[in-house]
Length: 164
Ligand code: S3P
Image (cartoon, rainbow, N blue to C red):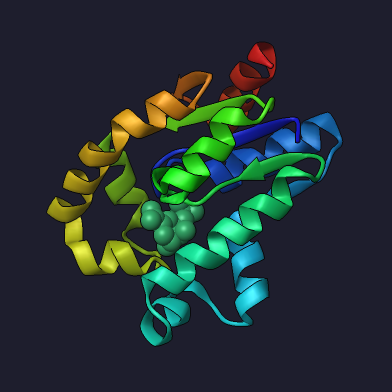
């Protein structure tokens, strides 16, 4: 992998990941999509039918596979929070980039998205709490951070590219 993107739901990992991969002419891999493929069903259905623990196990397996691949990897918002994944990301030689974003921006981006069971379960206040609990972990796992609130996706890509 050339770079791994981490950050909370709605931080733009998928959008930025696609653009960055295109710019560098390398493939983009999305961990959520790998989990969907493994399970053969959408994330909200995995949560509903099998539970979060099964989702996390599939996510961990997908991360293990993805780390050996090439390109840009977009993780899920909860990926680096699992200890086993945190250690794998820390131990890898690949630069880990934190896309940071203010809660207000996240909420406006997630409002119309139906496929995030956690966002639905927790509501706005719950999401702000969850982000607060996770922020230190995102900081610790990453090699550098880009504050994305005031930037367009292309500007985020430029900033990352300069730092790789
Ligand atoms: C999750 C984030 C989601 C997805 C799942 C759980 C989380 O990914 O992996 O719904 O725990 O924050 P995105 O960050 O791509 O939305």
